[in-house]
Length: 569
Ligand SMILES: Nc1ncnc2c1ncn2[C@@H]1O[C@H](COP(=O)(O)OP(=O)(O)OP(=O)(O)O)[C@@H](O)[C@H]1O
Ligand SMILES: O=P(O)(O)OC[C@H]1O[C@H](OP(=O)(O)OP(=O)(O)O)[C@H](O)[C@@H]1O
Image (cartoon, rainbow, N blue to C red; front, side, top):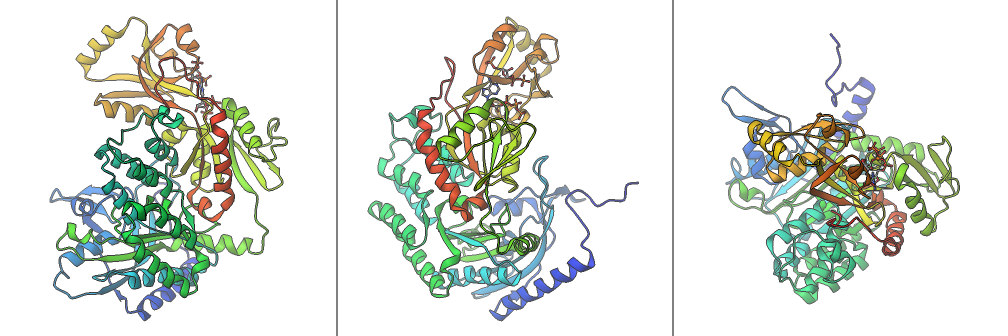
């Protein structure tokens, strides 16, 4: 027997447990001093009850009990408190203020999920009260709690979802387009947002494969696109007002301004970054949203917001707001900060792909004014350090992992690698080189035989180096496939009977032609992207500055797929 803990779970030894105990006590004492009462929620919930509250923060562990109920280990405490307030506490007059320190559990979502699967959340919820005073109380409490947890340097990204909701509602746009915009905000995919909002006739619109806005007024579409890039202090609020007020969509901003003023008056102005791309959080928020990030950590410390309609999914509506931060994340950030306090600003870490994207990536970075000395011929060196910048040389398919986990601040790779890895990064610029298509292909003249075989067996074998992209494509089509995962020379598979079809990249079409393969259908088109870690982007202004220059230069690179290609995803 191998006596180990399950992957993602661990024992906490005495030294660390003592430190955690101290932080937990200090934080809970703080919450108690502000009138928050302790509560505890069950480890397990009925899955349908959790689902009713909206998009879940992560994939929970699930199992059936002996009553055949599908149960979930809580991935989050907020949904449970909403359920509790709508049921057992429905008759209690508000406002109700609750605090907790509880473990939450999250199933790994991919092979690269190195995050712990058991985390400790410290949080508060204030139920039955709305308005700027409560919003400011909650945000200020998070900053005080993080300070008690030893985190000195952090940024609080702050926005309100009301402006985007109003713009979408009043735009008159078609529903699929509105859903795609929310997805783009949720996924922090600025490239998709630009495509969705591109003016007809522009290069970006010509690239668009996305839903049409229908008869949406251009001014709304333009405002929706710009909103995601607005960031700063009071100037950012002013910019949002200038954008939204003429369109009648600034109603939420008065309260947001009031909240911001209260936070500035409380001395928190330096900590706050008004940033409307923070709306990427779960879709149940209805007002203010915020996220705390450390410059020393690649994943957020904690987040929160106002969710006035969530309790209504379990009973009568009640306004509510709250936050949670992760004790383990705070401890990691505090430790990293302690080691680096006093450091001059560290070099910007950029993940640069080796292989076929390498030369164009280096050319883009040089064009943006970065010192790329030594990058083209690194020998066996994997990190090239030049003044102000460290280049981390990676395989293109690994670039999203390095950036998502904070080992690099930003990077370059193909859209295909971003889709395949599914990493949580902010996609900032379509660099317009590295154009290629993903296609389904088969040996020439075999269509009828393959379809007949598929009709008999109910599924077909597909060989590919890109299992996620392939699975998603055939799931959209409703076709059952068995995937044969290969590392290269995919074209061999139909030739030697390993699979009926392949999903692979084609650029010039030479490899397909030389091996007598024919394209059956298009899966997607891809170009190289510049992308960033979300925490790095909010704490290091060099990333947005670099993205601006890369975006300005990108049109110089012409996306030139072979004939018949549809446009990049
Ligand atoms: N004809 C092409 N064949 C393969 N990749 C292409 C082609 N044209 C553009 N690309 C882009 O280049 C990337 C792959 O680069 P490269 O071939 O250097 O790496 P790889 O060895 O296939 O990838 P990895 O080492 O990460 O598995 C693809 O993800 C795609 O975005
Ligand atoms: O349309 P073309 O211009 O002929 O390019 C397509 C080929 O390029 C890629 O292979 P790669 O050289 O990356 O090797 P791999 O088969 O090992 O992935 C891809 O997998 C195709 O085989």
